[in-house]
Picture 1 (cartoon, rainbow, N blue to C red):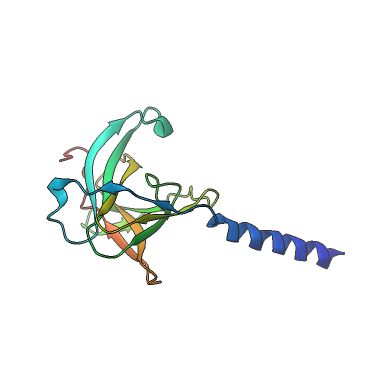
Picture 2 (spheres, rainbow, N blue to C red; picture 1 turned 30 degrees about the horizontal axis):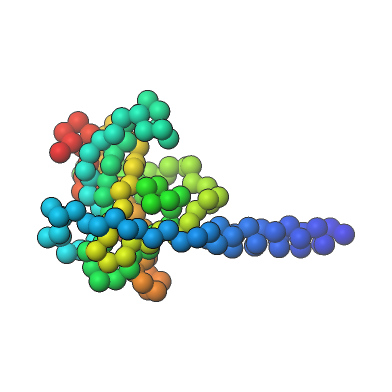
Length: 160
């Protein structure tokens, strides 16, 4: 009986894992703004701040733009276009970047987000009180090699 229960729990876990990505694929239709047309590589660009977005009451969030000016399709995993599964690094006193573990990741609700050639996506990140950079892991077409696109250093005090 124990083995049967373990088997069913294992089966449920596998089915749940496979269903994480079985949702519809989200495809961006947002064109790259004219002022960014000169960029020829995949980029994650800080644009502005927002105050009191519904998901982050009382906090400031970064507005970032993930652009795909290439001829290939860009794919990333997230909770929607505006909320990718991202990486976060801060600059230490020696000028090196140190990865910070957010500790909040949950696979429930993840979906595949696709940015076709010549399109972009607006991303919201919560604000941090120190110099940092944000990265989004992505894949190109069917290439299984994960890459990461990083913002430049974001300094909240001197945001430009």
